[in-house]
Length: 309
Image (cartoon, helix red, strand yellow):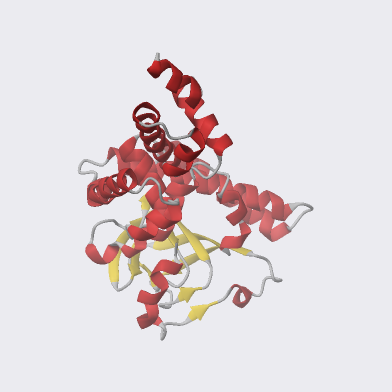
């Protein structure tokens, strides 16, 4: 995902790049702190790791890629690796900020198993690269009970980090995952309830083109990675938009297209079921038979016999 954008970020090579070891925290894959800004600005910088910032108190400015955005209490924003940014405190306000830094590998294996990870990864990886077009602000404002819940998570994580009791790393990881899920859900809700649905509108044509491509090239070895690259989207964002716009996951839709083509071949040709399986894009006859029965309620042979009778 972020690798897709690194080539375009070469112009920021002169911006200081911070590494996790710079925190001098014993080689841990994460770093947590709560700090104050009073009439000050953090140095314009980048990280090799991911960083979550939550505004616990006060107001100020967040500068990303030379664009400034107002930030207030309850705002949470995610800075992906290599994206230059800084935070500016307002002259009349003391800013208190929770900072949660972690290397993607710390939770990467869990992202593959969490349904809501896709929306969070869009918020983390996609949103900052849209700010140059002023399409999406690089922050999410949390209100009410969710704000309290997030602050409780961050406070507990900070205490665990400082005191380091037995099992603290595992507990911090679970707290981080909970935080990511909450943020992902809030981001999804925020996008879906927006008046102009700008994010969906922006990429609706791309998803419709992807659907057309699948319906024409169904026999190819199509993968979500291939499709996302073809239509210039991250895998997580492509998955998220595809499900939101079509109502089905990429695999569900692709299997449906392939089974539909198989029905035509079973009805109108004398081809063997095995040949039809490969003609429509399946690479395993058992998987083909299973998907066919799941969608049609009968096996391919039973379907053909019924059409012949």
